[in-house]
Length: 166
Image (cartoon, rainbow, N blue to C red; front, top):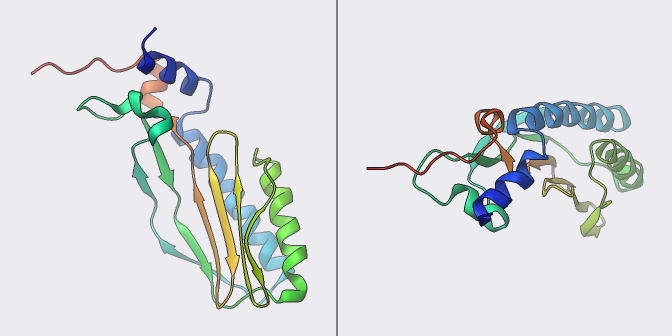
């Protein structure tokens, strides 16, 4: 079995990219609602659109030929709330975000990047390579990047796309 086939078969075990985006949009909404419940002054605004990219090194063989990619990662639209989570509420907010993320398979717990007065930043990762970043300093931000997933078309096809001939 080729490396491409091995990687493709590994990705077949995951939901397709459209399914994971729908799950994460639901997760995103729950996080924003819970944070706003704990810190009512925070009002979330969409600041950047969703973007797509080819998978990285872990699944490089899947997208190695010059054709439409069978798999991709997506960075969901970024959300920002003007203002910060007060230091006294950061622990409660971080724990609530962690609880929601665990229910979506983010089992690593928070990786603390920064935890200083009025400046907090954590990341969470899933076994499939997805990452959520959540931080609060001047403003509060939330981003989600998926791991590598097959497109719905590739998942339905069930095999790597043939290499184009010219």
